[in-house]
Length: 119
Image (cartoon, rainbow, N blue to C red; front, side):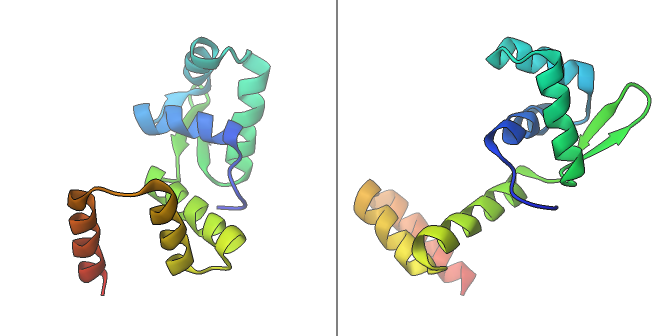
């Protein structure tokens, strides 16, 4: 994929992640109802997603297929956040998260298990 997805592009991706491949017209209908976007706005954002390689356009009916999974987008966003705000340090990121959010004992046990499995 070429570049970061902006919030507007993530709204298009969210529709595709929820529904799978859809026609651009169907995406227009969903986003008009969900957030009040008009047709031109939605088509412009879909084109940006295509240009970035996150969506593939096919025929018939301007079918849009997501090429980027929700997990891949989340990983990219997380990496960018850690690089930007924590100098690339996952440890600083987790430390800040835990200090500000806190976690339950059950969540702490699950995290410890995930860390052990990732070693």
